[in-house]
Image (cartoon, rainbow over all chains, first blue to last red; front, top):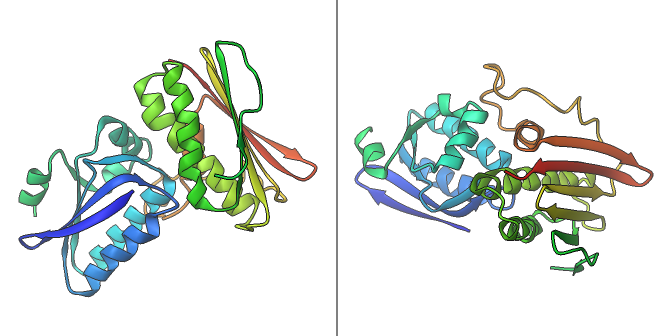
Length: 110
Length: 150
């Protein structure tokens, strides 16, 4: 499991490879907060290579969403597979996040 | 992983995984993988293998480590999974003083809770498993989760 970060235009794109769970969620949180502190405002988290997400992982996404909003920024999610979509629907987090089917659509939506 | 062992000699249609881990969340993923692999062998549904089992089991072990054992590395978590062609029964035991399962359950989907960072673990266990039971033991707490194979 790992996270890679790169810039696509003005957007910071984070790829989540493997699981986003209690054992590694702080790493993701810190990486995004570091970028936010540097002044970045637009964030996209791409789950194309993600296995599963637990409640801690969901909690970090909620927390990051709030912090980014507080700084006048935006967070988008992309590429949730059917199982991850179910997870977001069960927890109603699909109503909290802007979720795009593909990375391109998410990038265009900023 | 410390103390990983097969605890039984089950029949052809029952597979058992039995593992003790210290209270360290870094061990969770490996335990989940062991159980998930047996569900694959038993031909469980894709969604059960990719969503129900890994997420519910991660929550239960995480609870045992962080809430049951209060992150005390001297205390262990015991996981025993019995996987048959009918159902998965997985028990997660900790060495803590226990906590009130029902009182800990909130509805994270309510508007006032939707932006909470915590509170989704027990909710997801109940949503993703067919049955979740909590049993207080003399020296710890046991959570038993059952999932019928689809």
